[in-house]
Amino acid sequence: MAQFKGSFITRYSFLLPAIFIIVLIKFIYFKKTKHSFEKLKLYLNTLILLLMLFDCINVLAKANKKARLTIASQAELPVCSDCPKPDIYFIITDGYSGSNALKKFYNYDNSAFENSLKDKGFFIADSSFSNYNYTVFSIGSMLNIDLLNIPGNYNGTKDIPVAFDAVRNNRIIDYFQKEGYRIYNYSIFDLKENPPIVKNRMLDFEKNPLKTQTFLYRVNKDLGYHLITTLGFTFLQSEAKKNSVADLGDMTIIDSLTKAASKAPATVPKFVYTHLVMPHWPYYYDSTGVRNTEEKLAKAMFANKTAYVSYLKYANNKLLDLIDKINSNTKGNAIIILVSDHACRECLETDPERGNAELQNISAVYFPNKNYSGFYKGISNVNLFRIVLNNQFNKKLPLLKDSLVLLKKEN
Image (cartoon, rainbow, N blue to C red):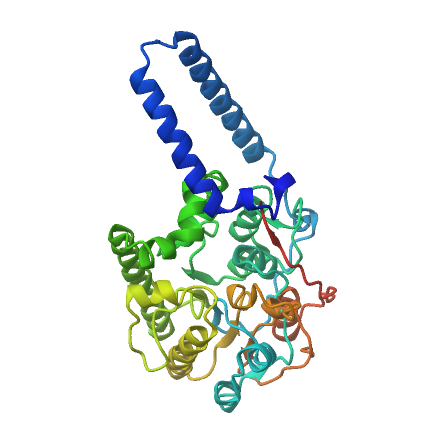
């Protein structure tokens, strides 16, 4: 359909009725005809088998010839034997927009939350950015302190496997393991030797790019909420409710486990990776903590800025509570890194003035010694851990160019 991009024939309003009519005509024809179509059956069966064989070969070839990161050939980070080894809490707040974007595009002043962080001793980087506008790419780059060596600039079948591989085999986790840290993976990703505690349903499809290319997946992703609200397909609403209950349960588990980890005594230092999928859509709560109904979630999905800001306010309270628990349990002696992987993509998708606003994120750090030298205005996520390592672990890593990459959706 790339040749007809933007044409009416690529729209669901044309495709779905056309497919229905064609299938109906074929069904009636085959029902009435007495012809056996043996040659046609043989041809179609052979064609399907060949296509399946081709796909299998293609998948195996990609599995054995994954495009690796440029970091694969880089020297390992040297261990610092005489460095202090404070516990580290790496907290991702998924889809959290930076203060500049919130003011310009949402008419919301987030200074109360940022001032609360500053009162707790945090440093907040001014005008910070994520390097990519999709989660797995952003996390893969951040944890490898390098940009990704991806074949193209698409959130699609060629690039997604590379990004997941980057997350799983990343330099930061490898380094801290060699420093003697115990890794607590309270994220939504699989880390080498550290599988996740919870499973994120959105990422299940992203891990398997073949599924994302199927017609039914795309219809459900693009039109699912219309099917629930406009056509009243209640069975989809039930499925959505089941998924939302599971997602909220996962976030509760992650929050509880992170607090428990900060309280538990340990003979070795801890590196805790906590990934909270909020204020990313679905916007499960309003600012007062009232649970949104499935019908309201469907109607407010993706681009509703009011619902997003309301959920962001709820997220602020949850994040401050989590940080307070960590600081209290560790007596303020742990490093806390609070950063978002990207801003709200969907909220700005149709805004012609958005520019790189979906990359404007929040980036805040807490160091027990309050030494925040090295941070600068406009820092991007790729340099975050470079500065942490330089500042707190006596490394001398050069800073990289703060490149910003707006990945496009694969057609």
